[in-house]
Amino acid sequence: MDAVAYALATKVPAAFVQFNGLAVKADLPQTRYFHSQSTLDDGSVLVVGGRDSSNSSTNTVYLWSPSTNSWTTKTAYPTTTQYQGQSTLDDGTVLVTGGVNTSVVRSYDPTTNAWTTKTSMASTRALHTQCTMDDGTVLVVCGYYPWGTVSSNVQSYSPVTNSWTAKTAYPETVYYHGMSKMADGTVLVTGGVAGSNIDQNDVRSYDPTTNAWTTKTSLSFTLDSHTQSTSGFGNAVVFGGYYNGARSDNVQSYNPTTNAWTTKNPLTRSRYGLKSSTLLDGTVLVT
Image (cartoon, rainbow, N blue to C red):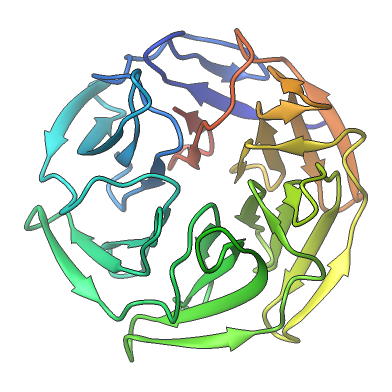
């Protein structure tokens, strides 16, 4: 039997955690959506930019502590940003890529609380997904590339050489999709909106050892603007988004062993543009 622990933290509603259930966590200092987020080596969670309650792009950076269940403000991102990608690297720094009409890549060092510019992507990119691979590289998949053009482009960033390399393209153009790295080192991509502006329920797996994509069991419904993380139990968990064209509170868990989806307890209300990251205890914090 699957056991999925997840936590939800947001301005409205509040957060919750327990096995396939709900428990309140501290609200973000301000409303956020279409931001980016990742878990740091010490177990805290860094949230960058996104839209506020007035739909304005922000540059604020917040850090959540699981031990105190509280948020602190960190050095702001150098520009306002939304629709960017983010993941924590093996050296403990955080890589943030792209955003609206930009190809800029920056690194955040939690030990110095400072931002550093890295090699830009070849073109502007937004509404993409990003994760750090087992070999320390960063995989960036699809999105607007360049801005306004839905892409199937896949790129890999090496923090050692500070350079980008093209990988096998995703089988279709897509944005507003979900993605997370699985325990076996593969990457699972779910749903999204195709270049034809049609919502998808497709699920595919990327194997970095073969540089190839494989089709997996589809979601039972179309889904976009959701968030996805691989829990400490090895399952990919998908939260919220647009479900069959309407805002969703749905939570689904994918078992890579059985290649099957299971419905879990829903969020307290329907949401989209949310983000998630797996904590050191295996639960998932959703903001």
